[in-house]
Length: 147
Image (cartoon, rainbow, N blue to C red):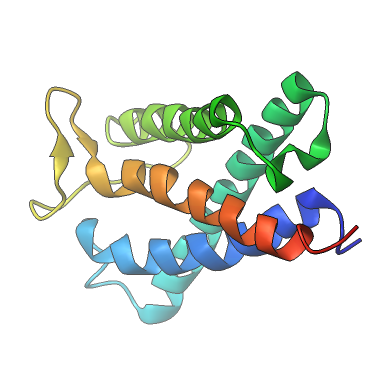
């Protein structure tokens, strides 16, 4: 099981995204006044959503590349597609949630940098540029040593 690319994607996505969610929480309204346990729970829920997005992106690239192990030796287009799927889904969710059209609703504080013209937080979008690439790097290190 530990040799399955999906297992490793889940493992690293959980670890990386939970840390990111905790670190970006102060950029959202109400988080500073919310009890620690509730903030942790909200960040954990967001992390599970992030893991689902990461698995979806991995699966989409795997389907097009005809290989679940594309992540061990990714090509440029595979990395670009992997990242763009996550960025696209996140942009849509952020847009919907900040306008009250999503399952949950949230508001940014003035400290959240915004994408000009889109009104979407830069931190959650950067999450989907940085963490998928870091996940690929970690999975490659983990699985690349195995025959």
